[in-house]
Image (cartoon, rainbow, N blue to C red; front, side, top):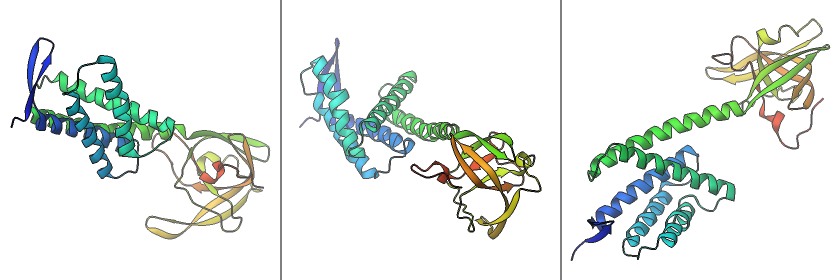
Length: 272
């Protein structure tokens, strides 16, 4: 029993081995889905990607036996079948998330196909697989880093600190990892470089010490001040607690303060 078929491409006849064709499409689909899963940080099991890639590969094989109808074929291949693959791989998601996933799948597929064609590999499958694995690895590392940089830039804020009618503006970073709370006032503690806020601190400024834990130090005490007002995104916090950090918080002076995430909680009230 033969395991290949003859396909007509233009004026050429191409002999396609079904098992090789299935395997080739499976690897490509799986790698693309794996890149999307890791770059977009979608918490779904690899098993789901396996079944999704298998579905996509099976559909690609069945397309070889169907009559060539350009419009309907394109619709099925690029829309309906892809939506089934997304559903199998990542489950039911919101429309905006679905659009983001689909667009990213197209982007990764476009990059892979472009690089494969640029190398003029032909029918050397092992060379194709090496390039696919290399490109996908670079995409996961590179694109995730780009996203992280964009996220860091997206959570930068220009905040205002007021003390005794004097106000300074500081570039601050929202840090979801900051869980420091002053045990006396029960207020969240943001952290600022000491040299930046020194010009505001006077003899009347209330100074306290806030206990904290860090790597290598389980019982540290951070010097902090209680300022008259801290303004973040139009919200004004009275008597805000700000920890004083010796040194620089960022390498290239990108920001000079770390904001507590509680300052951004929806529905949270501005404290006094």
